[in-house]
Length: 583
Image 1 (tube, rainbow, N blue to C red):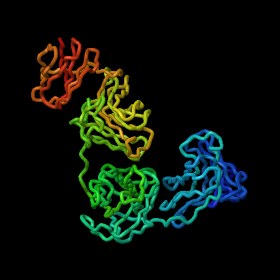
Image 2 (cartoon, helix red, strand yellow; image 1 turned 180 degrees about the vertical axis):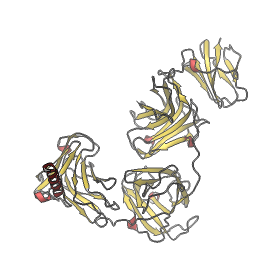
Image 3 (cartoon, rainbow, N blue to C red; image 1 turned 30 degrees about the vertical axis):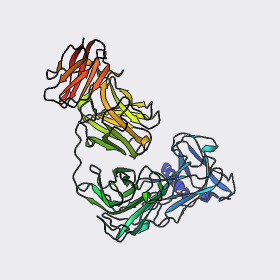
Image 4 (cartoon, one colour; image 1 turned 90 degrees about the vertical axis):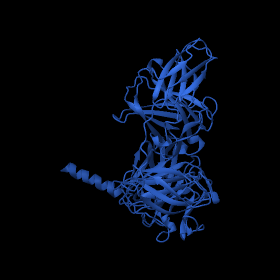
């Protein structure tokens, strides 16, 4: 019984010591009980600089020393925070850390998923007031976590020391009204229902271009002024989106920005998000853009964010101005199911854009080779583009057969990117049946040129039938050239980059004549189209390649030494070989 009473007294002590905002740290009653975590340590100290916006006597000090990049400290409040009226939290901060240091404020609690907002210091060596806007946050959170210099590990120095004071909840932007689709902006929608972020301003205006597919009276106008490449605006929904049957969202858009401007539609929920990009196809006219969210879970997402011209910083001009209207959800066709691809893969004919499964902000398409020079002059390649999302944005390609690494232990491919030298190219092999997976990293050695890279999977079992591309791994993509990777000629090789000839299949359908020959071989494949011929010497080194796209072709081998060679011939029916003797 005594132990039980002691337990109750401890609970009472903790709840008594928890309190409501504001905190000014001037007395024991206004000093909350901090719970430090992962390398953050908070104490109450004398104000080290009683000047400027803060002349109080006592402040809180956090020193970050080791631990994790999210080191910090939290306070448990006596009741849940309500942002129905007071939609902003402000706090005075002093540090000698560099300008632009991230100060993350995270609201947590047992009632629902957490919410976090970042602020950035604008001075060093002086007090300033930072603010965090939580308009629209539900009333189920009662903990505040303070994370200074989020993203870096502290070292206990002055740059890892942060003083803060006067944490208060104050009047901020009007809390938005929760809305539902469809939205036509004709009535019942106010400017305050938009939550603008990172340099975008959205308002309801008279339609300045009543023409074409949109002659409605009022529309929404989003103008991007500076800020970040992800500047945009969001709306809050009064219920979660149901994608069980209606997985398409459409919206009318008008802009004079160039054709091909990226428009990102981002669905959000308290613990995550999913986004899709589409590109404008006209300039100076209304068009209807459609995003296909097939496969997304239902009753999860309750916010929609609009990010126009994602990847660029707006300048307030006409090219940074976007009108949009008539946002609706509708029934539409499901995307074509991906067709498994056969190795090797050269993207000339067999693999289509729809065969890639894109996740977490990656978009892979089949495009014309942007740099047909050096080691790769082929016509078409795959473009892997990272546009927001996660640092592990990825695209998956399913294979027709399981990868057998017993003899051909590695995968090679040609890659072109303008990303800096040393960028991580993560290649992952996975199984659709067992869930087995393995991943290997290489780093780029050139920028602005094609290069061949090798991933060695020696010793892995033959259980993988999916290749997953995660290029630029570790960095959130911004849809720029440095977030774009072109891929071509994916083949299975030995770890030294050579093909194992013992694993190639022979066929009676291939004919080569004359054989032996001195200067030229003519190779035919009966009624099959020869997509590619790769010629290898007996050491397994590739010495010649041709992409005839016909059922007969001639190889010029006059420059090659005498000896026995193997031609690996790729047709729509598969890959086979024929032995050639140069006399």
